Image 1 (cartoon, chains in turn blue, brown):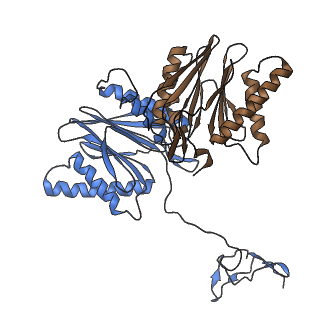
Image 2 (spheres, each protein chain N blue to C red):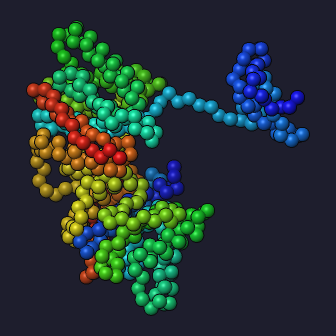
Length: 264
Length: 204
């Protein structure tokens, strides 16, 4: 008659089937605290309320950045994959070449990023089959915007930045929000470290608040600026670090380099 | 809406070669509405100490008055000037006294100690202090400020170069924050005195 359960007793629910052997909640009744009956699960409705939850999203961290030049674009992202305070991998790419002329960088929820890339790859293949040519960068930009808006009411948790060369060979960068609003810009950064990087790009690439002469920067100098930016983000953002993958896109193709960061 | 983001602020203090600089924006707002474009957030406490108070404006002004009062008492009793280390510790104690009903201010202290070496410290709203050798930041756009300072900072900058670095770091950061900006003010403190310059940036 003791209210305490022994190990070899199995719980039965109201229908007579087995249920998980959990300790029932304590009810504070007029006779003092008493254990609830074993065969009723309250669900937090009439007795003490409790909350259960499932979130379909996880944040896997990381920072991406893209800069457009007169005849090139630079797209870069760190290679750390994290969840909470844990590092899941130090060597996962956030960059994906969709065509020979453009690269998509995405940070956010890895599974949504992977699915988004799959969908874009398939659409791009179909276009290629139908039109006998690769999609141009502005077309890819529009397609990505539309694909994101398609899931307006259950979004892809992906913060995207698209970099490439347009039909005239000039550098093009497009920035996105999670539900497909996009704009062609001269430079962009997204992800956990974007706050640390964007003001720097405003100053150095956008030449804001500067009195000295504005000049076009060659690709090599921009790559050095990108490395500096990631060193900064790696210092102050816990989700950014390990290494940076940098892709330089020109009309002749895509070149990739990797640069190590602090692993802390 | 956090109380610390009600009025808006951005401030940096940075160490150079035998000098320190401290800079802040000029905006005072009530959430989205800008109310003043010449609100002072950095205060000179004595020839060697400047304090930047960022956060709820009423607490900024009250805390400034409390600090002036306490400094005055110290100087009467001790018959000497306060050093930045002592000032920083005093501020930390004052804030912790209000542990369960705090001043909504996150201050930064910049000064030259009795050997004319740079001193920098910052604290949270309940007085947890941090002393650094390079720079400290506070305000509504700390992410932006940390990014700019981390990239632009070099050790042992001379007074003029320190001014340029502080100015660019502040202006670029506040231009990406809706709650701070409307110009800036930069104080460079050396053993020979304080040079104060106003910055004209985006007026929005």
